[in-house]
Length: 138
Image 1 (tube, one colour):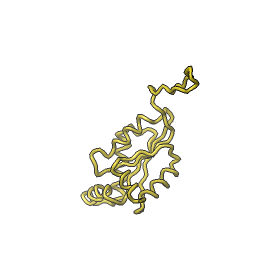
Image 2 (cartoon, rainbow, N blue to C red):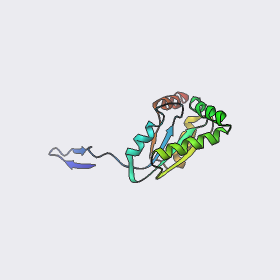
Image 3 (cartoon, rainbow, N blue to C red):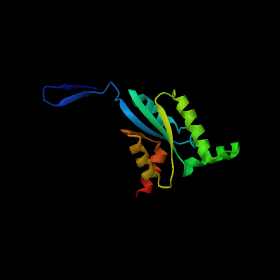
Image 4 (cartoon, rainbow, N blue to C red):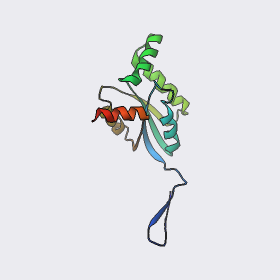
């Protein structure tokens, strides 16, 4: 980003270059066809030396898809989450991408805790999950 002084002393920003972030935390929604869109966006925001942590919640409506997959494959939901996250990471190129699961019923608090543990400067999540997280805090 370039910052220039104009004649009035105000700073102007050239926003033609996207911001680059070092640590991003991305919550995915395996129950939605658009559930990985946030990861694709985060990839464009990730700096050259950046790192991304992908996560899925193990409770709530978005976890039902993991439950269904686990049942169909006769594996645990935790194993299903691991397979989903590994596949999502591979679709992003796999480089500089780690995965984790978010346990517990208080998604908002667990999300904050997981993002802090990942030392993330940016948290990206699908709008439907953002709405659920915000609604749980009202």
